[in-house]
Length: 470
Image (cartoon, rainbow, N blue to C red):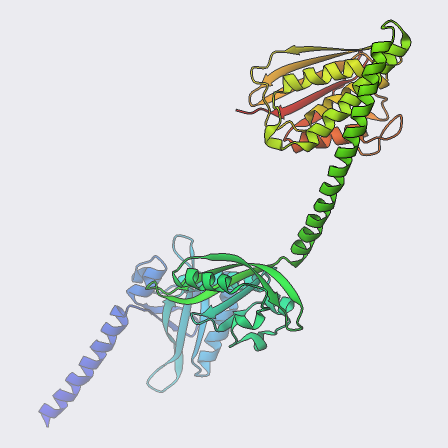
């Protein structure tokens, strides 16, 4: 009998030691409290989570290490324990270094020999990383749900497993209707089979495919969409799913088609206009030249006919500008200004233009319409002056820009016009499109134009900047 009693006592001792070793060595945190949340025991893992040694925590109150927002949770869960209820909950706890972690607590009642509840025993797990990942996934999910583009996820066979609300809004298929179907339900027959063959070949090889579909909604209406389809891989690199992000471009396609038709009409109209105007202008120039040969050079009529001839030549030059390819354009701004000067001085009697150049590079990026700019500025200077007018043009180099300053000694721009000088329809003589179009042309070539105030001086001054060509 004594030997049996000793064996039983040894078994109990072994069990107690084993349980204690388990609590101490367990790779999960373990904490034991009384009913007032005072820590009676913590293992090394739990203490390490908070950046402490176990002895630094024993005797402390749990509330000292819980964020203020979770104190009510501690009180509620401890109250459950008083009634012998176990529970699982999350707490945000404060580390010794001030950092915060999220822990999962699995708490059970701790009882004495009379089965009275005297506290809590809990296993504590650090789930901070999991919570951060969960938060990131929630953000991603929220972004996809709110996305203005359709998002479709399929398995590797093409069976739909997810669609976002935009997909349903666009196609007319609800989430429930789309689940388990294949995206081929959207096929309209307007997209060539080669597109689908290329799509599957690309994504099955692990590459991203981008293309355009003409698809059909549930109600039979056609729509166009740009699509990006890419594979989703598992941790070992195996393709498990495909995700498609698709943008509805129906309005753009329709607008492009209308614009294409408008361009065709405009090109046809421009061809007729160029042909007929060129012929009429050529007749006008020939007759003007013949008239000049028969007239006295000192007569007033000779001067008038010269102006008619110069204006006709200018119109032919403009037709040439619109009629030839952009790559053939002359891009030397100095030569363009000189050509405009000659034309302007012939067209407007009393106009004199002087040019000073200190720029080292006078070639600009593009110049197809630039001559129109100077034709318009010279014409304005001449038209707003009752007598002769002098225009001075200076060219300067500003790094990779050329700066052109234009000054005339005319009457200048009225103060009430200055703030809106380049606005469409603003003019002192009617029209109001010359400077508006001038600004549009210059800005279209990456440059700028501005009116320059010259206090105490008469006339008008402009500053133009254009990017130079390397």
